Length: 505
Image (cartoon, rainbow, N blue to C red; front, side):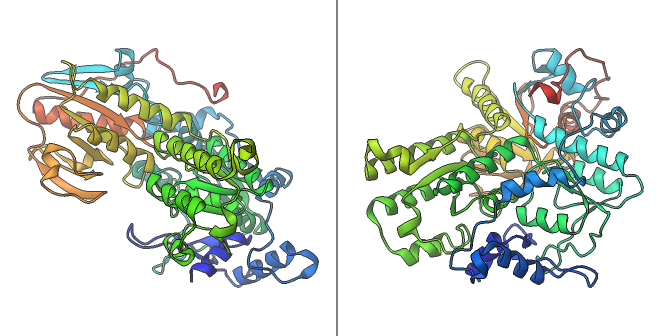
């Protein structure tokens, strides 16, 4: 099954199964087609035939499909949009729905007040960099603009636009149809018809999905973050030079799946430990079958560690921990230098900085905020707001917990029970005092009672790159209400702090 899954990733026309639960493994399957369109099997067979040379049968490693050139060719179809129009009415609706930057609420007022807010006994410190990044806000804006631009056409989206439940719910209310996943985990494009509009989310879509949608002759609105596209360029360059892409990421994450579809030969490593395993094999060899079993879901079709690790390049899922990506890059560079010598390093190793600015800035801001624990400004706790399936949000919480600060990750204010002083939250690692006794597994959803103690509190607050300011404001409203039952909310006040325009990035 694993070899079949890898084969589909290499052939245009295949798409990806979505997991029915976080514990379910994802493999690649052809989409389910309707009688009116070419079947997925036919698309796969035709694409494979086109990719082979002189009609020869595909080898263990099929001829590489040039995804970069194909994506560029979509500009010539007249059915492809990849830039926002900055439509004023769409921007106004985003403001009304609370799915963008705050201009008058609590968060906006905190920005104008040095990122701090005193409410009774609670002092809140907002991270210097937090929340909606440019790429995410851009994607949401383009989705809103698509609804406005195509009022009579059916709109679909291939996945969540971003990892935020509130924003995705707003799109559903605007009659944007999310591509459904059947009970067996198969992603079904059967309801997508010629002339429909299909939105690709901020973290991108595989080149196979793009090819299938193009052949359906739909209008494609590609909201892929330019930083993600930069990673695609990196792995494409590595493939063109005969290098295997070592992708630091989670093999089942939508962004990594898309990135892998633009690569040639690749292997996905989730952390430094897996990267060390790969480097040990490069230097010393080992049990080939054990290696392939370990990375069964995370390598390209026909991957041979005895051959494909001679030339490597580094890339990453943009939401991973910056420090770990850098450490993996340095480890691979040292390994290739040790194996091939300094003079030949450039022939065997490639690296391009693909760490997302927004991810880096948010992580750096948390390191700065949590670096005062031996001073009078130490935090009593850290609040992290963001979707539970958001990779970048999980890393923000990890930083706080690694510093020994009680850290609570919620996806919305609904997780906080004001009357009972109780919070339902996710934990990433068991290293904080109130959580250690629970021996929590990574990502476990737990409930903590009496989480806000009596007396003064200094609370650090941050939010993931897919989190609008309104979500943070709603969470803080409940915190203030627990500490002061008479709290009626923070009155809106127009502020002078403005967000940067897209063109400035």
